[in-house]
Length: 214
Image 1 (cartoon, one colour):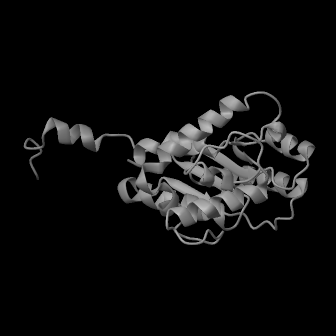
Image 2 (image 1 turned 30 degrees about the horizontal axis):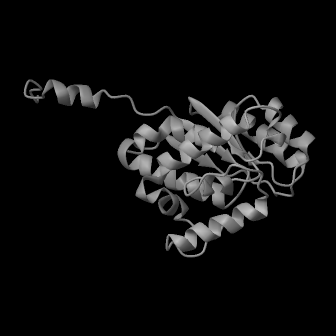
Image 3 (image 1 turned 180 degrees about the vertical axis):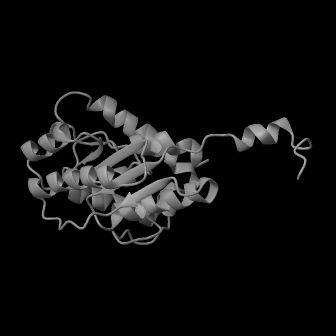
């Protein structure tokens, strides 16, 4: 039997360090969001193992309230039938083409954490590069994001880029993104989510995991 007396107290404490709670992230989109979160998952899992699950429900996206509701129902069903226990469950969707009523209702009726974005998820990606202080349309977000990609020599921005996480978070831009989102939240702290543009709650997921990304 191996003698453990030679193991230092520091090593014993290190081995007992708690890994992050299991996260379940259910995405509305089928490309950009899962690509980003899978990059996040890969980085964390290199250190801590499989602690983050990213699911892409088989839902056709048409920009209707039914699909957002279906996303929440999918999450509820998955959590209830899963053999795995999750400390954090997040549902990720955008304002995009939903009506104000549909968007606000989906957020209010969800029993899980909602990482909503107004107008779209790309606002979170854009926040890695710059601060947005006034209303911005989803098309303008994409235009601004493309400009930033070109400035930084990252090539063309595409929704199916599997390396999106590595690209936007290089040069310690993750901290910049969180600060920029905190700024937007303070700027648009009043009113319903549908009226809070620009704003994205995706930073809440990242902020809870950032110590495992450093």
